[in-house]
Length: 114
Image (cartoon, rainbow, N blue to C red):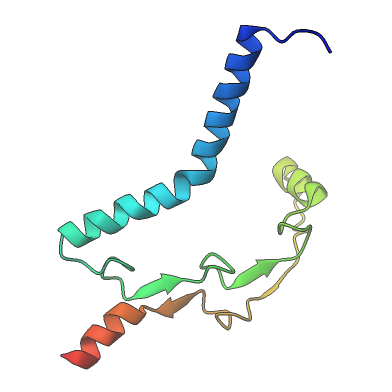
């Protein structure tokens, strides 16, 4: 193995930092939005919408069939080319019963207590 240069080490470090930032971004965003809601006196979980999107179908009520992460390369390619057909098959979400959302548990607890 040849010697590794300082610029390669720096590139590896920057790449690792960007990867970690990408992985942590949803948690950081959730933390910031929760603290803003708390400061405004809103429900920290739903923001006074009284509904929370289903985590399984992302609020659509449908789950895409496909690869291990819910997507297929050929389906995405044909959809981006716009060939007029809709090859993406989906099935109803069983977690939310195709509604796409749930009632907020924190808001419903406040209404019962009042």
